[in-house]
Amino acid sequence: MKRNNSESQMAVLLNGKALARGIRLKIKERVEQLPKPPKLSVLLVGEDPASLAYVFGKQRDCQEVGIEFELHRLPEEVRQGELEEKIRSLNRDPSVTGIMIQLPLPKHLDPLQLVSTIDPKKDVDGLHPVNVGRLWLGSYDLDRDLLPCTPKGIMKLLDHYSIPLRGKLVVIVNRSNLVGKPLAKLMLDRDATVMLCHSKTHNLQERMREADVLVTAVGRRPQFVVDAEHVKEGAVVVDVGISYHEGRLVGDVLFERVSEKVSYITPVPGGVGPMTRAMLLQNVLLAAER
Ligand code: NAP
Image (cartoon, rainbow, N blue to C red; front, side):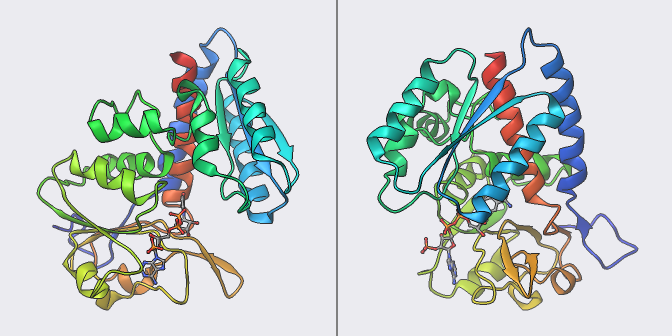
């Protein structure tokens, strides 16, 4: 892919933080036009500190744009049936616009069954089988339907920088329901050729070096690290992974080294993370506008 910053050898920064700020402003304006503020209900099981931090981040984001926020905290040992009943009562509650379950859940709970209990119209994570089915059958609209927040945020970021996908080889290192699989479908629908890689992929480094667009979402530093030798000259690199390495939050990619070789790159933090958060707000707004 061609660089558009010919004077400098550094990649163009895919600035998710700045783009997300603009998106939040627009969401706030649209929220103000609604007859009543939408409400996001989040279910949090247990005391995992990372999950708690994510939930409080969502609460701050909601406050900023005028979306009401409601947290339902449940003990680690909560029973599946109890949680399903809680979800059903939120489905019935007309004041609740969007419902999400903070993942991961304790091992004794069945996440698919729980997500399937959410009313698809309130499924602001876009993980209900009905919404997943719409995505895979191609009957969706990126701006109107409830799609998973991270893949949607990545598409919005690439679109903002007018990065072409048609005919390009996109290599995604992740095959989860949250990131890799939905992103593969969104990219496929833009006529990209998509390869989904994972922990069992043979010759992974070679696969990554072939990519015109490389997306990594592993989050296992230092076991998995993307260095300059793993990327193609001029590639677009989207770093979704989150690890805590030597006391700070880092992505999968060695940013300084890789950005000297590629054309576009997301920073961590400030790339995909803020876009994911903004897309959750957008999904709550979409659920309300419907
Ligand atoms: P996940 O379900 O654990 O997926 C991790 C993926 O990485 C799996 O497909 C796994 O392969 C693959 N993998 C693990 N070790 C590998 C290795 N050594 N080589 C190649 N592939 C390897 O996690 P997730 O929920 O998708 O999240 C992935 C990462 O993205 C985490 O760091 C998470 O924090 C981050 N994330 C960030 C955002 C954001 O907004 N920035 C949003 C969502 C997730 P297998 O399938 O074979 O196990």
